[in-house]
Length: 279
Image 1 (cartoon, one colour):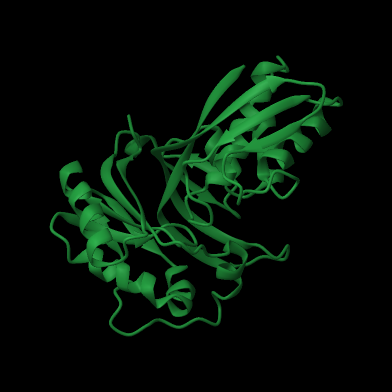
Image 2: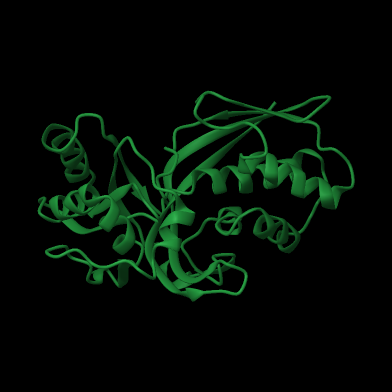
């Protein structure tokens, strides 16, 4: 058995540049990994199967892990024959990239397990065919991601940039295709702060807050609540939501905010306190 960790990510910024001819949107994103991880175990097998400890997660071709295996097999010319066990800790439909990370981890894992020695460039080509965010997770250092997200440019100047973070996710999720599809016709809510926030040289903003907050105003309320908490340097929605996050001065402040959020906002919230771009 071979075991691999699969990290979540946070969008420190997400700017939507316009719709492309292929139906996707051009984006300009700043992405960094978190110390929140899923775990994947790989076993040699007669066939490829995926097992998951969360019954809500599909284990067929609707899961990016299986799509990654199928894409790998196109290049390999043979079956990968792996039994994969996925332990989920990154919440689904949160904007945290759990599925994309699982797919990238799968590509790296089978490349090592089968000894195929595909280059980083070849793996990146496979990753881009699986999903827009997948290439970032092949080497998840703090990066600017362009195109539809598959053009990954590590930012050496910010390699050591890091911050404590607190995540708040309600029980519902948000569909990424819907969020992008609603972007052009959406409007800002009054009394909600959409302005760019700056933390130690990083400019934080998320264009998808506009459509998502219009449909789910409770997420706008979460953001405004976070901005009022002691020690918060910035607060934002991650990706297409529904996860909200705040960067804090200290880990202790993050933990206090997580506790207060469950008491004051919603006792069923998923909360996590960790580190952005752990060194």
